[in-house]
Length: 353
Image (cartoon, rainbow, N blue to C red; front, side, top):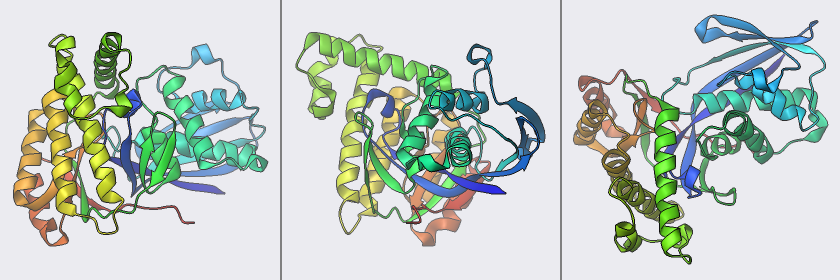
């Protein structure tokens, strides 16, 4: 039997930044997608989604134009076929997990990484593909194949594991060792519409940056600072100014968080303040936080967090809160009393080697 457990991820700083080529800080948590595979004497895959009581057949060869949006199993086969990785024996593949789906914790990316890692391990073991290579193929499968709007954060964080600062512009990364204290994941109970929100935010943010570049050929977003928002905002129509503000301010917040997380002694209060500042930008400028979630975040913060924010693209899904261990009970209760569906204690996980 072949077995894998692939973690979900939290974006701590830099939501809605990776598709602009700006850096993010994200980490993997101890909630997983599990893949188990047994060889079978058939020229196909028998896929069993255990949590949904759903089963289906995936053939080795699929016509790319016939693959439906979100069919990562067939898309992954097409991506790897271009690399010369082609199945030659069948498997029964069971997939389950304790990672909430459609919640901002990248359950879909964890699924894709597990599928790609399985295929490469079984059909191209001598390739000894690196975690970065797995991440690139997973990104090609989930985003590029379907012409979606996301960036590289999810696939890279999940493949590499740990707490990571990712320079999404050149696909480099740096491992961080900071301490957030205790962590809670809060299920809001509100479903999210990932692609529509991502598409709108990406289009408007990129349009704002392009307009500013047209007015100042020397402008480089990676060299920008907080002052550039006021300096250039009048080049933009009113509807693009919030996205410009979000791009600049969240970039500054992420850089400050990296500086703190690089230090031997981490200030949880400063990290919490930056997380709250990030959330304010997300809810006020990108407007990705429903009023019910804002209410839940405010209740949690009042009960004793260092900081909290919505996770992922937003519109619904999960939140993360960082806090002192002694406040866990009170904060959990505050979130539940304010309408949250569930609250889970989680920990960051790191590579075994």
